[in-house]
Image: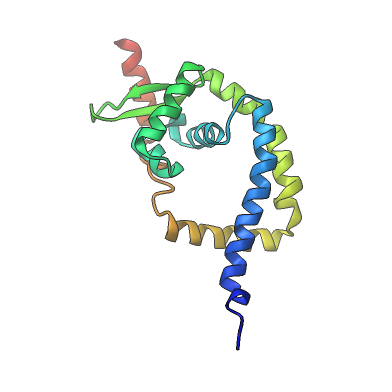
Length: 172
């Protein structure tokens, strides 16, 4: 009789959780040195990687797997710290954008070199280029199946729309 705990599906999920826990512990310590929690780093990085350095609050919630109230609390805290600001959505008064400030970009730029070094040391550097490409492909497939909203809003706003919104807000 086969031992159910030898099932490769259990092994795969277990290894994923163990790798995540180990990386998270290392990353959290480095992020704390820069005054950021893991959630704050995720939020500011997702915003910085989005067109216009902004996302609708609802899209940010979908991408981070935080609740809308959880995103509101994080954005409130980061806004108080000067890392983010909110901008009204020009075509939907019920919605607003979270936007990275210059101070937020500076904090991210100070944090990233050490963070990238840790990623290389403890994650991507452990894999040859072919293995990394295969892992990225596999992770995207799993992410898209398990968390289909993970890229919500990432391509909703063109740079031209952001510039038009910025120009309009400066005039008012």
